[in-house]
Image 1: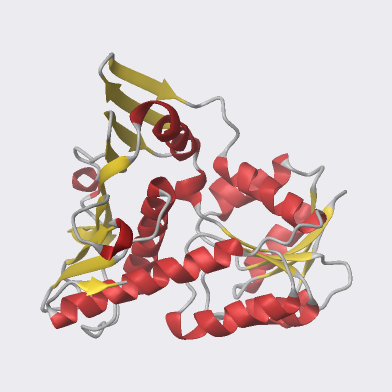
Image 2: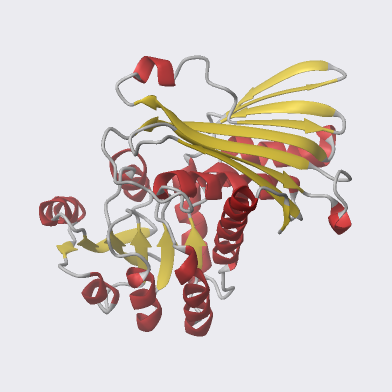
Length: 335
């Protein structure tokens, strides 16, 4: 059956990910309404899909011809579209980059639980073909992860408001949340300890960097389990595009019991074991966004309710915030 959807927010990924995926999955999704804070963008997108441009997200969520709400762009709404969808009993797909503030997370989780709706978060890293294949290799050839290293670098925003020391800029925090979720997915366990380190320039336009170490030791005994080193920083001016992409590190490096793997998202995986070097390029897989939309369609149309993604997102946010506490207190903290 076709799932009738309303779109709230046309984010940066609309043109190169969400729009092509919805076009490819026209047999499963029918866009009926579009809402965006820039009205002419909503009108343009709605016209392409034969949908209607709607002025407000509440009016969109309450439409009888909308079965689910796709929140695809970070705008001023915060959690309000999610709450509107819960009130209307509509399933929610939360796109990458749409931040859910920590102070709202528990209330949103409660409302989703009360509404009994399907809720899916767009975790691109964990659902990419290379990550899925890595999990297979961990179970079959490489063995349990021991050390994980992942680093992501962003350009310095040319102009941005001053951010208090105790709070990360939204874009940096969201990247760290996704990196934490990725490491939790690969290890298949929850961290018990976290250590946070941060550098913030003296001016609001300078470099920013945060690193955290997650200890997955079972029983909470430090040093007896996997350790993940996660970092994300903005230290290249945006105009230095060549420098930003110079000698990029692997998106994720995993040292396992019987080998080591290097992941370059979304489709490249190079791994080593006693037999030598192995390289896999998974270009034949369907684009990750199409796979995620397909999973969302299945979650909404089946009788099995899906909302674990929200728990995972809230858990990752809590870990990032705990790393900030660790930095401010100057000590390792239990999670």
